[in-house]
Image 1 (cartoon, rainbow, N blue to C red):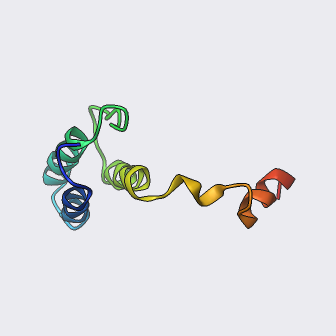
Image 2: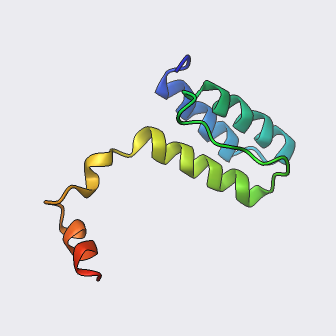
Image 3: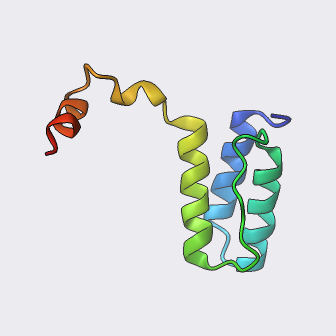
Length: 84
């Protein structure tokens, strides 16, 4: 990743608070280009406000949510195993 996580996080915030959809899309494309190829989103050719918000959420989850959160010792993992 050529940009630090902090730099990407700043761009994510900038994109979230931008009112103009064209500017949001430009920032989203910039963010996506900074991600390692394995983490990049396959972006559509048509964008909506909802899609941009969802894409930002997906990027944040990939970068900042620790995958160990659902280890077998985690209480929620037991609920998933039980089908609750």
